[in-house]
Picture 1 (cartoon, helix red, strand yellow):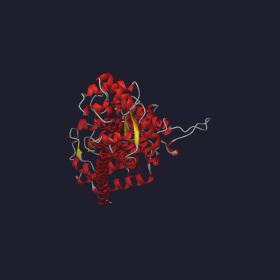
Picture 2 (spheres, rainbow, N blue to C red):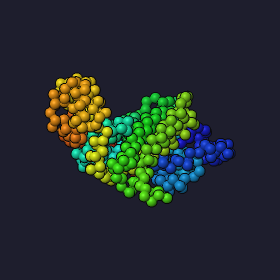
Picture 3 (cartoon, rainbow, N blue to C red):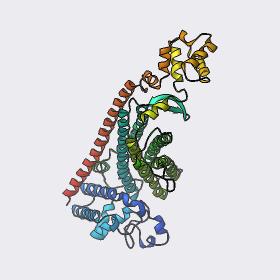
Picture 4 (spheres, helix red, strand yellow):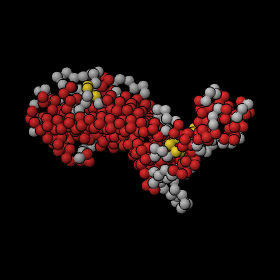
Length: 488
């Protein structure tokens, strides 16, 4: 994914003259070790560019046909058959010239590797973003399935890892679905700004040839052309935005993984054996290893984002070779986080939730205390006074008698002055406490049912959106293939 140097041909590669074709720095300059990812993208960009050159009369039909035929041959031979080069772009051009002769060099008319590389990156990265969005939607659907199955399964809710209030497994699952829905939005927003074509910007100052940048963008399925040619070749902010979206997704996954690790430790969830392992020495162990790795992926994502930003920091306009080291950060983060999303979704989908253990734990630590304070406030006490009463009771025990004595001490009268015993004792029950919290977004089964319906609708909407974008790209590939065929 490099650029620079003389492009006049001669000995060595298609780009470098003999003077620049050897020496110990050649391998250091090369990006071929990770360029296989851009092989198909570069072939598509080459084809679209050649079709446009032919349509504009910049390259005659016979030369265009020969180049396009050579590109088909290069494609069939595969990445491993490419000649040596600093990058896949140079290697493909060299392979075309080897097949066609000097006229194959017309393929590079009116462009630079600067705009070529930037276009290939965007062409490939947009697909990576769409695939990641699909993966997050699948994870959301898995969480929705858990919510549907466990809508009334009461569980403890925690703050500061301390028992706080009862909730349900469904409410917990939908909390992560909501976060993943925003992660999907961020990936698709990054897609929108990635899917813009730099091709035709040349090195950075445009070209004197009568190129049609909009036509190339259309053939490659881009939504628009990047206007300023200097910005077009140097901008990598689309990688920053995408990598930041992946880092945010990794943060969501890390929280999900941490919850499952903690729940597993407390006996509140049983992970499937496919998502756990045992000890090499302690045969009784069942360890949530995969989720621990999901949790750690966030650190890898943050490191990749930091590496990318540091590489880009302070670069002058327009092209600098530093940019060669920018995209590997983005690819590594995308791959790691996408894999972690799959694993986390699988762990959630196959886990078992022991209802009895969850319900027993839901009442620990006087978790219904807030419900009692709310009840007293509904019965006329200022909430802060109710809070004081229940806090006093918490020092004595989580039952009716403790509450009654606390009321006597704080208010000078028993709790029956405010609520009857049956109502108070019902409020102390975790399941009843959950059922009472029926505000929008709350854990009550009716509220969860509404939230679940909205979450499922969101999954359908986003699936349709991703499908439409993928269909647009497929249609562009078909259209390009049809145009190439007319030049055969």
